[in-house]
Length: 301
View 1 (spheres, one colour):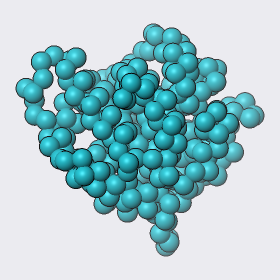
View 2: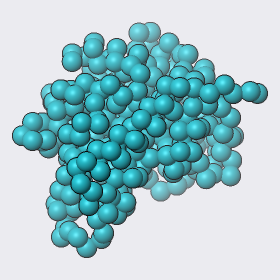
View 3: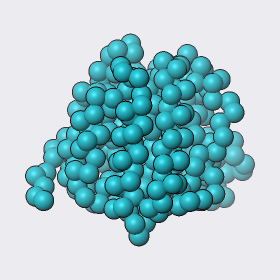
View 4: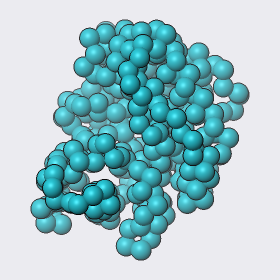
């Protein structure tokens, strides 16, 4: 797939984006969920080797194809790795799956009700390398904990600043200001976030587009103005801690929004499974998330 084909697939394709981008802090938890306990590895290299093996198993599975999985977000080490001797981005493209790369370096401590992204001093070099490997776009995450307008404005401004750098490299940014679904002021966070995103979208030059990755809103349809916005290529949703059945129900209530799930995709997979068991469990998860992304429920006000 060339860039134009990837753009069309992400804009119009039926399916969802798989988030395979657990990084250093979240990898032990992901491995534990996969049935590999703490102490099964010595040092970071072995730990990342185990999570890479899990991702490779997912990518090579016959259940994982571009028919229902239109994109996949990779951790940097995964992007630089290989599947059966083939660079991971190329292996994804061969299956009809558009590759993205997680570029943020984690979160700052909370201030003004939000956690901003840490500095990214090597961003230009990473983007150049990713582009050279055939990666289509990026994902950068920050977190909103409470309805502090100043904090939310700052977090959205930072997201769009990084997004513009990604656009300058000819890549598509997924802007991800996550709202903590456990926040006591979650509905207020959604409303302020919508206002701030719309302000920043209006400031983008004509012809430029970004993607948005957002927590599922308290009120279904809250993000309809973003789904319809000409400067938004696609709106995707994170599961945010919901179990997959609940996440898919909430997703189905929001028209035009597709999934970009991580834990909700992987929660039934175990290292100890036979290939047949693994492929069956992965296929069932993909089917359920696909339905939530493509079959939308009628929601009454």
